[in-house]
Length: 413
Image (cartoon, rainbow, N blue to C red; front, top):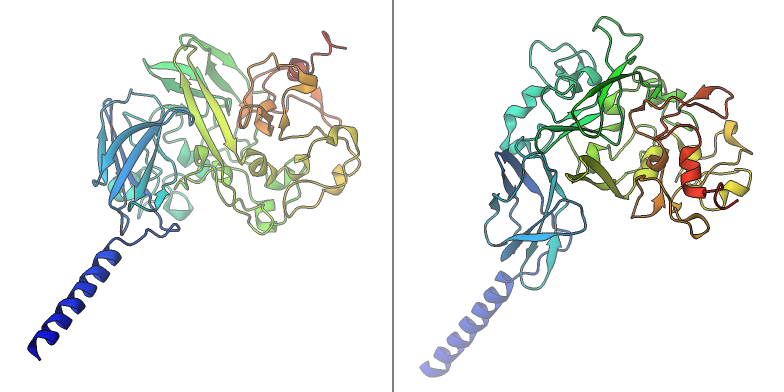
């Protein structure tokens, strides 16, 4: 009788071991999250850290500078890697995958700006960064801000003193300490702190070689300090957001959310506060001393949260507008029966290749930012707006230059 019991015990033990072994090799939940927890910049160095994933047997870290070509930096079981192959003042983007041998999950994109460490994210490895914007007992503005408004708090760094991005001049520092214009353009200088009625009035920007300053006055800007409800083509449902004054935090989330340029995933004007995922890459071209935006997705719907009427689909240039493509929005009464240019359409009008060097989404799709700058422009030739006034309306080029660069009517009437 002893022998059968012995064999039964062995069999049960074997089954238990097999069960434990199989559950130890648990398949990663495809919905599991893996995220970056640190991007610590150093001199030609970036220390990248990410969360561990239960059940993962290995991680692979990738890096890109343009969103198209990803190189493998590391494969192993560690959750931190020191990247010594970076160049100062270049933008780098990272992603990491986790696998258990069966399932692989991928992280959101992480951003790095060596040699600096961004104060906007990865707080758990850089808690001192909070003091860049907040102070506990001597705050000048709401939410314990060090300055009276969100815009002035942003300008503690983004006036060119503590960030490579100077939004007043519209410049970015590239490798070799070269200053180049940003795609977004200049906002201009703020008036004295006690002036609350006019936030923008002048600018200085640099040419593409970065070696000579040029005085210029922005001819149109996103008017910081004016109510959101004054946005052209608006259909804003949130009455609080409608009346609130525009500032940097109207569009940007200083605490980051993974979106390109810290753009907000929830904008107060969105009907039902729709989520916006904006994917893009700021690509550094050291050959021409430029930082070129490479948009991937989401920019039209982001701009449309305030300028909803202008989200028009293909063919809209030939019909009177009755609706907008902006999800959850109706067409503003002031826009009914206007004919408007389409967005998110290919740039090859009648098969022609555009002559200008303008930004597109997914390589060839026209978006709002193809023709307009996000912050301000210094072009001087004005257009007549649909309201009948003259304005340069944040255009990238004067007059009808952009129109002709795509449609080429002079050569192809």
